[in-house]
Length: 503
Image (cartoon, rainbow, N blue to C red):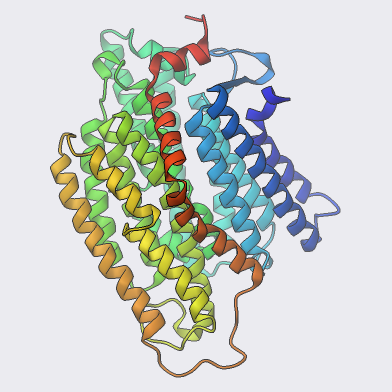
């Protein structure tokens, strides 16, 4: 059974989604909710077991149909992919639980689509093959198109249309890039590609470089890197908050793909193509942080502010990918988990605050008081301190690690300057938003004012509690992040794990 564990984070969400489309779940919302949350728990537990197994026994390679790499399709569970699969499964579970308060009634098939999205994201993290990375990208995108339209209005539809068109263009560029790389290297297995890139000569070097840079365009679009980030603030702020919270992991798929491709295939061992995207990533990342911080300062409502915070987090992660050291990758892995959980918590909190403030909703202006000020205010304070990066929460640990790992990097001084100024802008904006929403009030609440459903509170608290837990268990988490980063940079070890004696 243990040899099949690697495939469970992909198979379980697929089975859950199919089961919920069939009787007796087909038209029974209560049954769908029970199955969705139950399968979410099972998927999270299976992913956590995979993470522990990977930590203890090292990288696990699962050859589908017993066809070994590079000829067959393989799933690779190393410490990095196992951690991200666990994070995705947990986020899917929390969002499924939150939606049970009524968001899943605002359209059809919310729960099956949620599990299809988790299937696509988990598959993208686990696959060891560039073509199947494209396939899993398409699975998650098709699910995300439908989720964006769930319970939407005209404004939502316009933003969703932009998102769909941009991603269709991105998918076309992805296919062209894969075609060029396959024509040049004769393989799309990532480990085999990394091996073949070192042997390229003549014009093939330039063709592979074109293919690699086209992939950078695709990953920049998926990850919302400047100048391809403009779709994100509108799309995330107009989607249902529970959908936006779930999407907090989607930009990380683009960043993860950059980590894999530009560390393994075009990394230290790639000969003439070594670190070919590093300079591009540096400046694009710094510019993304600047634009994200400006967006945070200019935001008029909480959801738009959180969407711009996601842009800042993407810029920070890509800067760490550009440094290309074990320490920077370890910092990126810790920060990735922290930023995903905090962003999702803030999206859900913005929704609860908006529901309790009447017509003012989540606009950053004086309005009527929320009906649960201590509960929502306390949760917002914890999430705000974490996202700003102040002690004693996980954002501070991540910030110190990020600054230390970029101290000696090329252009590190520019990064420090931009990152610290952006942190100050976030501090000002989030503090202003919190004080305006919870302190500047007009009128009084009424006794019939809406209160948060227990399922919604449970989901939000699960996310908010993760940030102090990431500090309490900072030691083991840091060790795990370092282990994952070392495996990510271990070119020879990964080739041996995936290809064995095949040359």
